[in-house]
Length: 397
Ligand code: PMP
Image 1: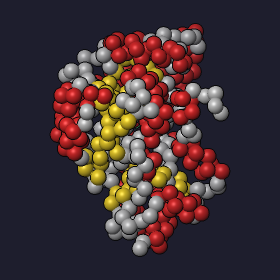
Image 2: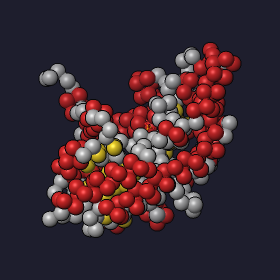
Image 3: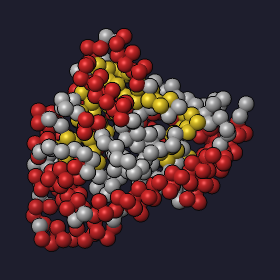
Image 4: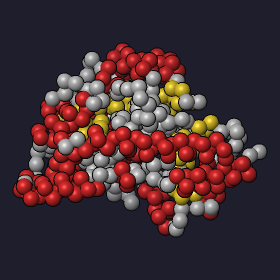
C-alpha cells in the first residue's frame, strides 16, 4: 500500500507473534520458542487481595486518569525496588512509568535516533528491540558474543576505526541477557562505561532480567557504575510480578525523563492506574522481595534440567550458553545448515524453538538457536530436548 509513510512501510509482522501464532494452531507442541513467564511465579492470591482492597478503599484514584509518568506513590515504590539493584540517589523526577519496558524502549529509541544513526547492540540481542529499531532506519555496530565471551576489545577497535560521530546510543542487556542468559563481567561493564564517556554515547540498559540472577555474588547493573548520567536504565515488573500487568519504567536524568513524558503522552497518556498501584503495593507489601527466591529457584532448576538434557542429547560440537539467570539458553551449532530449516523438521515432531538469526541485526546467526526454558515443565523440557537432539544428530554431516 503506497499510502503508508516510509516508517509505516518498514513495519513488518513481529517474528514473536508469527511463531506464537504457528505454535498456538498446533496441539501439544513443546515450545521453547517464546519466553513466557512460568505462571506459577505470579502471586495470584496476593494480587487478588491487592486489587479488591484498592477498588474498595480507593476506587476513584484507581479508575481515574493519572499523570503521564505515574503518581509519586508508585515512583517511590520503584525507588525502593531499584535500591536492591544498587541504584541510589534516584528521585521521583528521574522516573517515568511505562506500559511494559517495551514501551520504554520504543520511546527512547525514537527520542534519540534519526535514520542512518548508528546504534551499538549485542550480537545476538533482543529480537523485539531490533524490530523496534529496524523501521527507524538505523545502522548497527555489534558487540559480538562468541563462545560465551563478550568481544569488547573488538568493539573498541571498531569504534576507533569508525567515523564515530553518529554513534549515538548503545542498547545493552548486561544481566541475564536475552537471548543468551549471560551476564557481563565487571571489567566489561567498566570498559563499556569508559567507551560511552570517551565517545559521548548514551547507553540504554535493559535490566528486564536483572532480578533473576541465579548466582549468589551480587552483580550490579551498569547504572550503578555510571557517574556521568550516560546510562538510561529500563526496568520491568513482567518477570518479577506479572507480565500481563504491563508495567515497566525508565530511570534517567530529569531532562531525558521530560522528553520521555512528552512522547508517552502522545502514545497512551499514562500506564493504567490500577496496574501501577498493584505493582507499587506488591513492593510496599514485600510480595516481590519475598517471592524472588522462589522465582529464581524455579528458573534455575529448569535451566539445569535443560542444560543436562542438552549435554545428554545434542551433538558434541554444539556450544550452548550457561545462563547466569533469566529464561534462555542460546546454542551455536557447528556443521549444520540453517536452524530455520531445522525448525520445520522439529515442528513436525511438535517441538518449537526460535531460530537464532532473528537475534542478529544482519541475520548472520543462521546456525544458532534460542531455547526458552521458562514455561514447559521439567518433563516436557527433557522430552523436547531429546527430540531436538535426535533431529540435530540425524543432520550432522
Ligand atoms: N527487554 C527484554 C530483554 C525482554 O526479554 C523483554 C520481554 N521479553 C522486554 C524487554 C519487554 O518486557 P515488558 O515489555 O514485558 O516489560
